[in-house]
Length: 181
Image 1 (cartoon, rainbow, N blue to C red):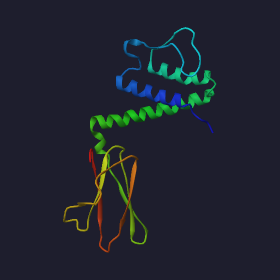
Image 2: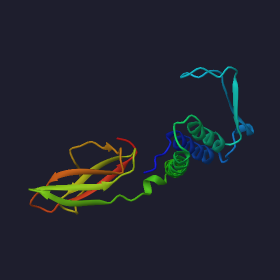
Image 3: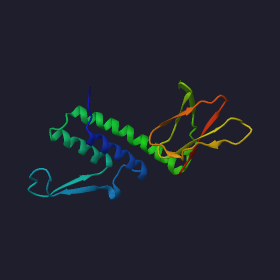
């Protein structure tokens, strides 16, 4: 099994997001820099060292390479971390754009129901992390749906699961998604 360097993963993910947000891989002004005057975990350097990078990717690469030079990770961990970070950074930006442009609310919600023993039903549905969901039901489609007993719950994952008691009558369920509680 190949591990990955968290420094490579996090820094590459940040480079992808910063590049997408700014529209350029280059640091503002064409150069990013940081001066190291001392290290918190060991002695050194004896003189200030100025690090400089043209792009966010250059800075990201140096963060990963530093773990190789420090003997913390082998090169394969750096490469694997860069790939994982690139994929996650691009996915984060794609999701963030949907929140920014409002299209996140166009994502359909699918509700599934299955018996789980006795008179219990398991209701599961896909969610979008950060949005709020509540379950509604009705026994007659000619009347409005009513809220369940719970208040809207903020999604912390990509799906939710609820258990309800099955009644002798047909019950129809739906989920309602909102931006706030």
